[in-house]
Length: 553
Image 1 (cartoon, rainbow, N blue to C red):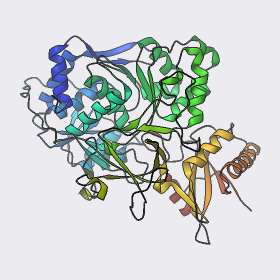
Image 2: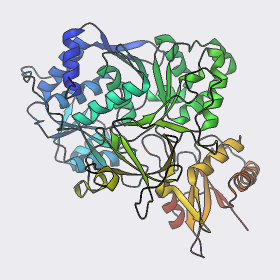
Image 3: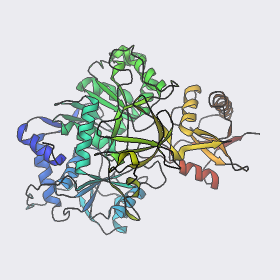
Image 4: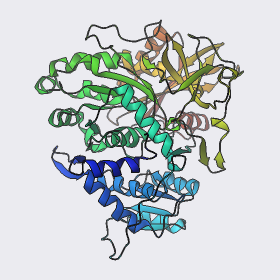
């Protein structure tokens, strides 16, 4: 019988395997610093629920604004156990304060859980009428552990904010049934089994970090192995070393982490690693690039890494997390043909799950398109949420599209562009991230990929391509490049020439403006993607802090 909620699953595990390790957190030296068995996890969840019970009632929302770690997860699970709706947030600091305040407003939160006051936390609390609970302080004696309650599957569990690649992030109302359905789909497509050991490092406010990296192993009665995002990004080799040390079956992240490993892990370090236990190396949350997969597989062959472990996938908060995915090199060995489209350039994100329906339609007329034609992706299935919650309230319209061939089904309009070929899904980019010149559509991410591939002096994920309005009503291509303070003027001139030559040769379009800004100047989403709309706006209104610029003459 399918469980109704992740809380029900944890209670079952606590009864059947109380001494099984549920979570283990590692420090920067790759040493275990905190861990909980399933028995301890449920007891900790119940004690935390006792601290929250007089503030969080069924249906109430509560914001978790804490640092990465096991305490964060215990707090979030306690909210769910009370029938509340958890908002996965982040600690308050200069960069996150505005986003946290939007979460409080949109979520109409009754409580904000944090792990210590600072100037930013105090500022937020001064501006919002919300109960604050400092979980770094000792618990007050006398709290009563609330009785175990049945949580209906249709009840809201999370208000998961989108990563923010659009200018105004939205909260997605995800039900307990959505989460359970997605856990079943992930396990099926990844080939996960009871006792899974999954090493995660993505932030817990990110859907992949929470639903993929933590809830998946907990759903299967396995162990969620945890490593700080800061440790991994500052030293990618530490991630690979922890995969080796823990013998993790599954680990992964966005495309950029694989690029970082290729660039920053030395050949000697690679040769010293044993990655033979790594069964599934998933790549998702941002466009998957074929050359990245091939370079990573080649470099870490010496580590015992198998190319067949590479697993591109596609997902979004609106679908709880996972939509589709598969093994890039097949299952027949390293020589299997990689799964690409008919052009050989796009990486397949796998076959469509049997429980999920995908329609590719014309973005304007909404008419469904034939296989092989690129259009906008619409999705329907048990993992797909039913509404957004934003400053205007609850909005169901983006989740209520209908197609005649699929009577009775409601579809979510994703805003992503893609196509289906031979039963496989290929994602080409965002609908709003296209540039139209003389009737031809160019994808900003494709142009960025060309620059990163053809211009070795430019670090990956430091170029943002946008379309700017032209006098003739068309658009022009602009490249904004993040550089360090030490990049010389002569080097910048060379980079401009390389960028223009590469894009002209491989995309057939001219780059009209190349602007240089200091690293960290451009706004990014919680998963590290450029917020392209904000970059475009700041270029148009002149507010972008450009340190050098060369325009086409």
